[in-house]
Length: 219
Image 1 (cartoon, rainbow, N blue to C red):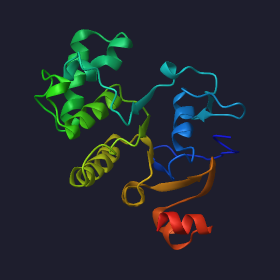
Image 2: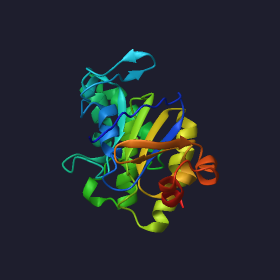
Image 3: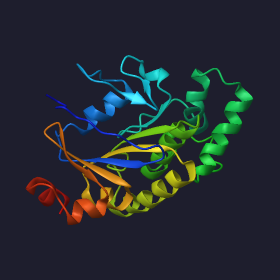
């Protein structure tokens, strides 16, 4: 099983990280939340509302993919405004809200640039701006910093955490990087072979691991 009897509760406004080795089931769990994978059984609720059969585009989620998934034939502003466009928002409102989202990720004045003109860190910020432009209550992030070099990655960790506090949104974040998880998270769910081995605050996982795997993997 890709996911084996997974059960967890995530609080509103929480930054929860799914941490585990490659092949542990982290992306599958994230894709189940997003609606791209439908579990064979069980229940999935957002604020008490059952979502298991709701298609991805109707779940109201912001999503940041590992590969950024930006449209190269669009400008930065067009990429950011795309979620508003598909929701039928007026062009004037699209422009205003896209500019505001770009300002939030410190990319003021980048709206007219092509995606091919951006650095890796800038592309990552555009992907985040696109995810937050329609003000979702839940944002899913699938290893968004994995393509960045170490220095930029550490800088973006700080920025993403500050952005989370500013937005007051619920973030579910996937990574296999222990330091990243310990630095950014309110709580961490350690995933192994499709099961959640332990869930708790970074300090609790570090000081009171429930198994040898958690102790060894967290470090």
